[in-house]
Length: 237
Image: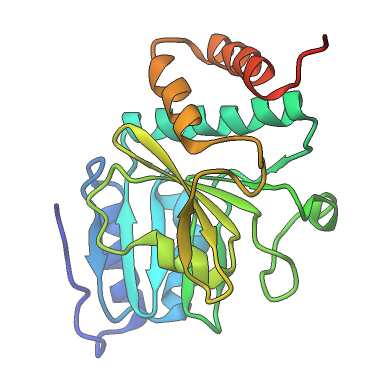
């Protein structure tokens, strides 16, 4: 894991930002760079201009700490597969979803910001369907976020998602999907069944995903829909 510390805060802001920006083009997959003492303004400045410097880099901000990470090929494949599972389940179970992808979600009052690996609006779909931008001080957070735990991350995303109010988190770790449901105390607890798709069990979803890793994307989606139909849709007598 590579890690770095920003220059002393006495340096001009431009120098601090340039130090971070230079790293965006040289990060290796799954080797995050960590910076301390980053202001909210610096985080937002870099987030707004990230794609101009190097697209694909993920930023995680937690109360003065900033992590930069370049996702690996495996990380991206798994997150896309889990997103296709959501789409397949949506089609079969007739539960509408709206994809938010890796939208940046942040709140200055909490000093937190991140981009989930994938996310969806489900229960609150009608509140955001016609929006071009999301402001978490006005609009709801995504109802479901997906996180693939395949990096040497130094800033856990789970507590940040919880503070931002994400009700459900699907976490993939090595070979299993865990459904984490946000509790009234603001913490996540594992649960066997999904909040967004109550019929779906995490163990069944994990088995399906891991047994179909060899398929291309179209075949994976079609198999997911067939599996969901056979597993979760009551058969007519």
